[in-house]
Image (cartoon, rainbow, N blue to C red; front, top):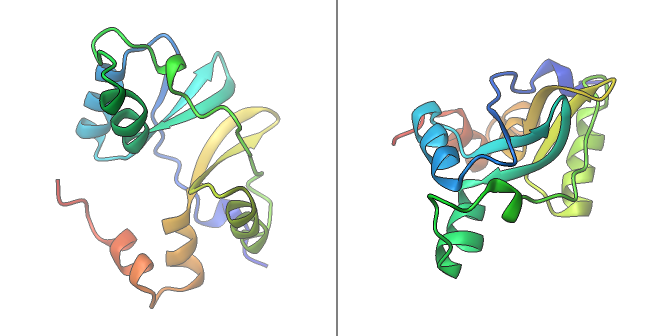
Length: 138
């Protein structure tokens, strides 16, 4: 059995829900990532993606300099353990139609597993795995 912990991403960016969309977008750009995990102390409360900023905020004419992450955070968070089976994690993504799962240990964020991570691990010859394995081009 391949576990989530064997291939999860541990290079995480977390931000408080009071941070602005602009700050999150700049952090995503600077870190070459597409999401930030929104936390309250050690607790994961949500995820904001670059798509969330575009579709939920900019397209709705929200000011990225004053709008807080709390306003657009996806809060229906499904988490996994680093010891969970990778196939089970993929099934959770499919069931809940999510592309990322925070990995927690005793309520503390320890990683993030994405659909791309699973593709690289489970189907290395797939187009998604090929795209996910490449360096960012931005």
